[in-house]
Length: 135
Image (tube, rainbow, N blue to C red; front, top):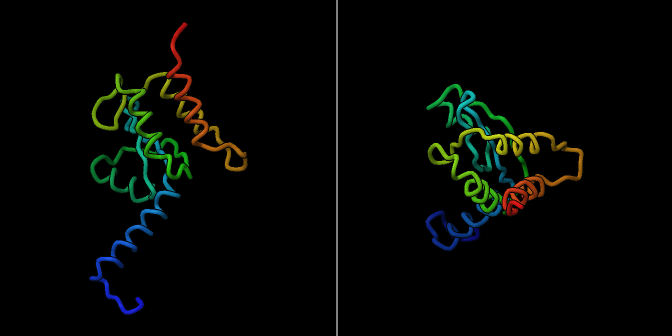
């Protein structure tokens, strides 16, 4: 490591910054369900380990859909989804499955990897429709 060891604060900070940068590019937004009564909306850079962690506490949890490659917008979009469905929050990131939330899940599921559709655009469009005032 060019003369520095693992205890060097500058090198340690640089390693952490590189890891954060790599993770932010690969972040996705996911929707999991536990039966038909609760839906979890979250974000992660490693869905496999995230799902494994959930299943230690709740073996019945299933991944419903994952919007991959959201990148640096994942935190913002996750927050907006949570805010939009706050009235239906059960606890934390768990929500009652409303028709509108299920429509978002379907829209994400309909994204085909071969299409030039960006998952963040699909989520953004759904949230914009929710945020429009009623006439």
